[in-house]
Length: 237
Image 1 (cartoon, helix red, strand yellow):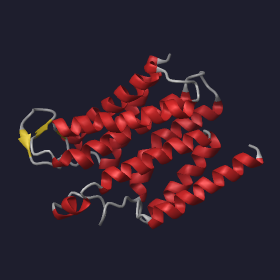
Image 2 (cartoon, rainbow, N blue to C red; image 1 turned 45 degrees about the vertical axis):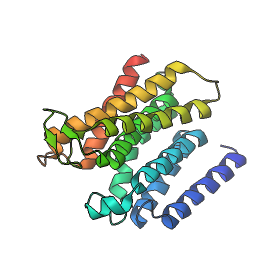
Image 3 (tube, rainbow, N blue to C red; image 1 turned 30 degrees about the vertical axis):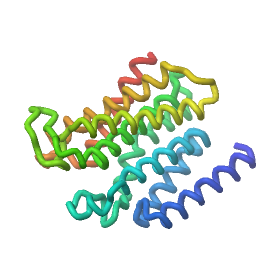
Image 4 (cartoon, rainbow, N blue to C red; image 1 turned 120 degrees about the horizontal axis):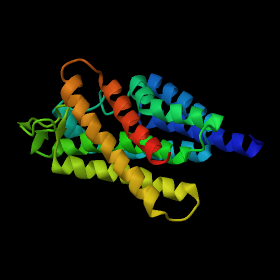
């Protein structure tokens, strides 16, 4: 790890910390948790991994802040005004940190950066689906297709599914740009579709377990991301 890498990483991490506080992306504990996650990603992954994670954080925040006043009136917002807590940060990045740890060991020769992208494509897909899809009035429970109130765990809609694809696609395109190997259609498709898959698993788990108090929101997010990542590992065996 040379001095230029350390300086660049430090600048980005400090900017992340200040920006997260300034724009109320996280509460204070969430900001500290994001800083710690960032350090882990820089050490075990690379600077490009950190940049990808930052792209996720920024785009997820844009989705979270979309019509935040309307969501607040309906009591559908995160935190008091869209800010997220330490638990949100940890569960969102848990699988990504696991991938970064395996990457540091160089076990198996898998495309770890791509699989890392899959993990955040899954989380971003879920964020976009839940934060923007909530404005679709026609929402149906994924397990039985009965019409339900927007915002209920396990609910899906046309707008939500479209936003899930968009959230995953944003991470896929970011990966293609950061990978520096030119445009490749297969990784773009894999990351986007597996991110979308993770969102669907999240909805199913939300319907079957979170609504019944058997899993927390964070656990549902982490497990659905794990499923998407597991499929990515299987594809690249």
